[in-house]
Image 1 (cartoon, rainbow, N blue to C red):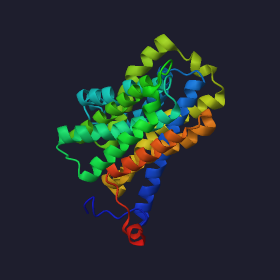
Image 2 (image 1 turned 135 degrees about the vertical axis):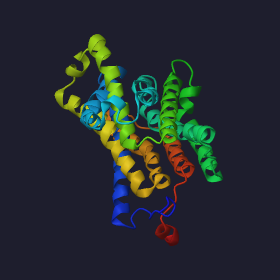
Image 3 (image 1 turned 30 degrees about the horizontal axis):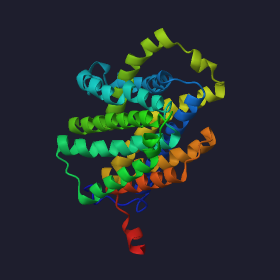
Image 4 (image 1 turned 60 degrees about the vertical axis):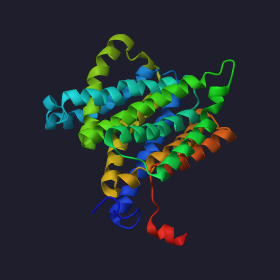
Length: 312
C-alpha cells in the first residue's frame, strides 16, 4: 500500500491510533515550548535545558543503544551520528531557550516550526530533488505572511526592542532541525536509531562539561515539583516519547498525513503557555498564529479524509 492510498484518519482502528499518536506528539511539543518559557522565568539557563533534554533522554535510550551495539551507534555510525548531533543536539537545544531571553512565547510557538518547514522544503529540493507543488508554495507564502504578523513587532520596534534577536535564534533552530531531517532522509536512518544516536551522543558531549563548569545548583534550587515537571516534560516526553509517537504516526498514516501534526504546535504551545507564563498574544499575533498554522497545513500537503470532503 502506497502512502497516498493509506486510509485517512478515523477510517480504521489502526488509522485512529495513528491520529491519536500524532496528536499526542503535537501536544507534547507544544508543552515543551511553553514549559521552556516558564523555566526561563524560574531562573533556568539554556545549558540547564540541554542537560534536561539529553541527560534524561540519553539515559533512557542508553539500554536500547547498548543492546544494539554502541560501538556502531546502533548501526548509524559515529561519523553520521556526529552530524546528526551537530544539527539537532546541544546547539539546537541551546538556541531555543536562549531565544526566550529576547522574544516572547508567541514567537517561540510559531517561528521554529515555520522555519523548519520552510528550510526543509528548500533543502529537500536542493539535496533530495523533491520539488514542491503549487499548493506547498502557496502554503509557504501564508507562512511568511503569518511570520510578519507574529515577529514583525519585534523586528520593527525601536528602543529596547530586542525580540528580533530571539526570532533569529528561533529561525536558526528551525534551520538546524531541517538539516537533521534532510540528513536522516538522505541516509535512510530509522527514526528510533536517529533518536537514540542523537540522545546518547549528545549526552556524552553535554554531561561532563555541565558537571565541571555549571553544576546542579540552579536545578536543585527549583522547588521539587517544578524540577520533576521539567525533567518529565523536557527529557522524558519531548526527548523520547514525542519523537517515538510521531514516528509511529508516520508509519501508520504515511508521511504526508502525519506531517500535519507539527502545524498544531503553535496553537497548543500558546494555549498551554497562557496559564504558565501569563503571556497573552496580541490580536495581531493571534492572527499570525492562525495564518502560520493554515500555511503549515497547506505547505505540508495535508489532505482531508474523503468522508469530510464529501460532507463539504
